[in-house]
Image: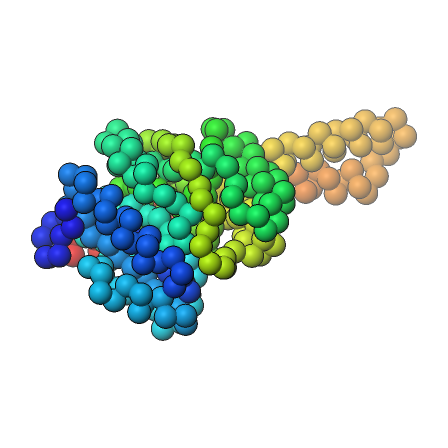
Length: 304
């Protein structure tokens, strides 16, 4: 049941929109029809990211809350704005392009009863443009993430997910402006020990044109994956690098000893290894301090 009053609700559905005139109305109507069959009080929040194609004209008669950005700020910013305006303890996020069907929303919300975040895991790639490159890059980045977090991740950056608002808001200072916000959230929840579940979902071809840039956004996903893991566990990333350099330095040292003298490259490798270890230790302490300050200010201002 949709709640149009200012009462306490169960689920806030946050949807970023940028030039989705061809799909947005159908997506919201389908979503509303599905939610009306479930035992939740809910609201639908649309964050318009400076659309210029009349997307908002398509939904102005629908019972949704519309928040407008005066210019295009990025999908990540829109999702954060949706979080900040959500009145529910649970946030359900999806897209307005028709790629995520509503069929599995009940399963996702049901699974959330025993989890902190439930992610819709896409079973296939449906976007035809750069099809093989998309598959390879998503697999490659996912494998890097799995190696770093020591856990299997069926879908790193799915846009269909439900999670507990109070937990997600703790990491608001980490979320990037672009599409890679989903990857950041997934990794943050896993590394912080929260209950993460994945539910297989169908993934449909999008309606209309995509704003996804295969080069820019893939590079962003990779950067975000490494940055997020380094933030939460710098030793996990930096110590293997230091160990690899140490092994190289040992090999060069043995060679140089047999030649009766250390070469400049060997000395440089040892210095580099020590510097990386020092950097890892300092990063670990900065991470602990940053998390403490972030949690402190989150608790302080969230109670006001």
